[in-house]
Amino acid sequence: MAKDKADALEGELLSREVAYIYENSPFYRRKMQDCNISPEDIKGLEDLPKLPFTTKDDLRESQLEFGGLGGHQCAPKEKIVRVQGTSGTTGRPLYVGLTARDADNWKELFARHAWTGGLRPGDSFINPANFTLFVGGLSESISAEAMGVCVTPAPLGSTGVEKLMEIVKEFRPTVLFSTPSAAAFLAQFVRESLKKDPRDMGFKKGFLAGEAIAEKDRAVIEETWGIVARNFYGLADVAADLASECDYLGGMHFCGRLLVKAELIDPVTLEPLEIESGAEGEIVYTTIGREATPVLRYRCRDMVRINAEPCPCGRTSFRFSVIGRSDDMLKVKGVNVYPSAVKDVISSFSPRTTGEMRIVLYEPGPAIGTNLEIKVEYGQGIKGDELEPLSEQIKMTVKNKLVFTPIIKMVPPDSLEKSTYKIDYFEKVYEKKPS
Image 1 (cartoon, rainbow, N blue to C red):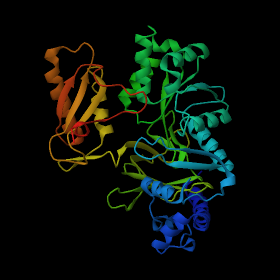
Image 2: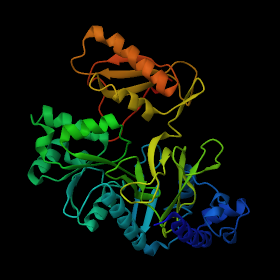
Image 3: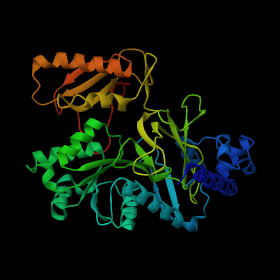
Image 4: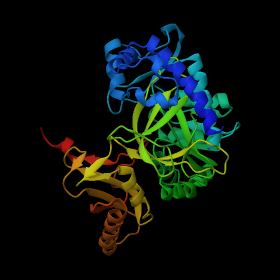
């Protein structure tokens, strides 16, 4: 759909959604009244910046104050058909409600992004995600099923990796459905415990979420498993599925049109930025078709780089790459440093490094007044006399690409704990100090 036509439709939907939210949400009604804004002030997309921002902490406080789904619940309780939420790894879980229409819209969003990423009816995958609150479990499985993809639910935490791989051998799913970190963890298990080549497991495609994929890591994953790997993206707070890479790469296509409106802002000034090629900022979401728990200008803290060039696939939505998180960002001697960017540099040295690294923090960030210490796993077969030159080369590459000078400490392969889910970028020494 052409941008001007989509913008006109989204402007109408935004105006209607704001009126609905104002009428039904005591939380948002209070926020808007505090800003002297009424629904009549929001006539189209150009008025979106008038609305107040929402943060995860805002919603958590609302759920503590009002109970249940919180003061931003707009649909009556009897219309809620599902309650899910965030994992709660960074605090109290944030609960998310869905009406039947919301659930159908999430199925639609899954189909859009999964088709973009190469999945088709008749594909199959094992879902190793947690099936409690986490949308990566139940929601992804229901939505994939609606698209015609066969799903075997096998949460890794309760199934165990041995049983999980038994199911893989038995049913030969076509899609490796995991995080990039878990793909590496599973490959190591297949080699060491099953004494097999990961390619022999039969996967054809990789649909990987939870982390951005560095191009070097993608190449390793594709070579290791014999698959075509695509990155996809979503978040429970807004929609489980919002974006995916197509075959032409260049970033993930935003797939939320007419259901979710995306903005780009400066994370410091909070001023809007144009969504144009090369722009970097924090992506912000407003639901424009949500009944149960809508959000206005939700700051998810993901920092992205925009690619607005025409895509050969024909999709007209912008593409974006996640470059870090505004709340993960460190300020090292005044320089903004994103851990994911550091990881990309480390991975580029594969196979001389394994790609695993940890940023060592002796004090809480984000401001770091000393040189940043980074532990880096060297690769198999690297000899002792090669470590110092390799360390120096990594240091200079980080300095040239990311504009800060780190302290690189080389550590043996497999000495840093592998993640079965998302990358852990930090070793927080300050948390281990006796109080």
